[in-house]
Image (cartoon, rainbow, N blue to C red; front, side, top):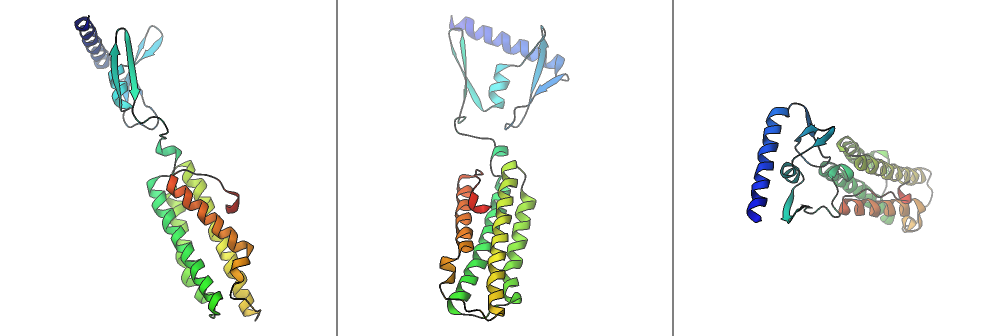
Length: 214
């Protein structure tokens, strides 16, 4: 019985190979998330593909038991094609943008805590690199998740700019700013919450919308 099965499989492979040689130019099957393609054969009004090429394309394996053929897709559970998540290029650019924004906030926090003089020129040393990094992250966005996350990063930059402008304006107007002013500032809390959310996205490589970033 096993010998007959192997013979039948061999005939099937050879038959498909003959089809492939004759009809390769007609149609091909491309599966989203998998590199490569396999020929499609029109037969009796339907479309057919070889199971061996299909298993190879999807990084799967075949097993045979009696008249049953099982196609196993290794690692298919829980896995998503990169087009559904955050791409590696965007992740790198997004993490850099987040780092620049955090450095800006840290510098502003130190200035408020110790009463250091601050002005527009001082802010530009931090806002400039942060803005440039956020712009680079936006350019690096390729997937839908990338683009959604890039918008949240841009929102985080906007929050940071608002907080910085508010404190600079207070300094210029000689308004007293308590050393612990940021600890109770709603905008600063929003910046922290959004930053934590963006960090969680980077760790999971998946986009998750968060109200704190809006």
